[in-house]
Image (cartoon, rainbow, N blue to C red):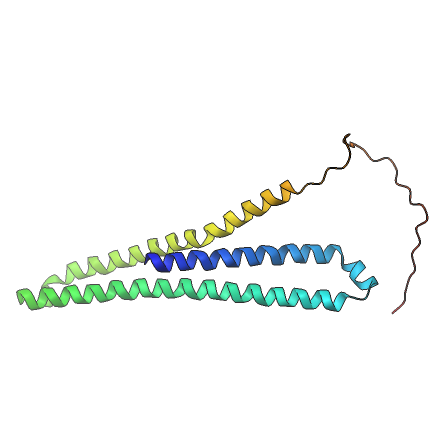
Length: 171
């Protein structure tokens, strides 16, 4: 199960990175929407967002399918081991299956509880790369703060534009 766990964690990390970049691009695009329209490149920006959305969706699908497969595999292997153990007990000791019914019920309940624990553990491991990616990106953004000049400006009282012209183009 450990190799599947590593694969799930890697795929989840790729999805987290892709989703983070996609959300940042949405934020950037919405803040520049008027400029995109002014310069007539809104179609290019929309196509770029659509491509990023499809890429993010592919990575999410891959991550979810891999996780579902590992959950199913865990459940099926546990049931297979239970059947194999019961078969071995029956063939080795020639006892009636009905006499070990209570034990089987306890084992099945234990398997159900262990599957819940395994699902929760997998969910935590799957979400961990997203949290690490988020913390890494926040650190990167904090490191990119641009400082201009030697004296910090605490208050802006007025802004004056000299020789600035705008032209409105009707569509």
